[in-house]
Length: 168
Image 1: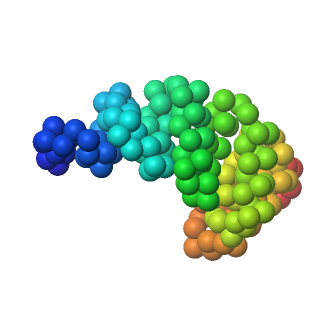
Image 2: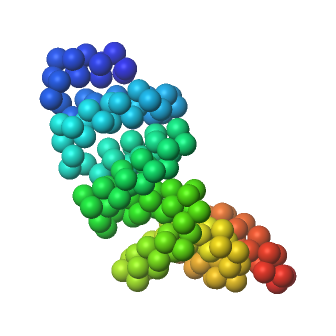
């Protein structure tokens, strides 16, 4: 697959999709710099695909550059403001930078619009837990569990939050 993508990119240097593909390939192999470089080339050609910004932002985050990741995730939200994955990526990097209050405000705003999104409630619970607001975290994990009853993770995190809040 790599050789096909590299051949396509060489033959069509203005083919953003070829560079996106190379970015995804290198990212899956955890070669962060080549992945970021490929995503950067795709962005130079066509900056209308939010997943390219998210991919590059994830590479930056993995390389311990949350400042660059934040910039990419914010741009991804400008491109596709209703795409939940873009917000989840931004919230994660904000928590990484100890900006949980800002992350929580973004999540609350999104939940007001898209309240049935499982990942928003999970992220809200994780953010509240980081803020040591365990009762609120427990409530968010409980809501996530109601949205996806077969998923064990909300109940695992909910139990931990109950314990940390001093409740059985």
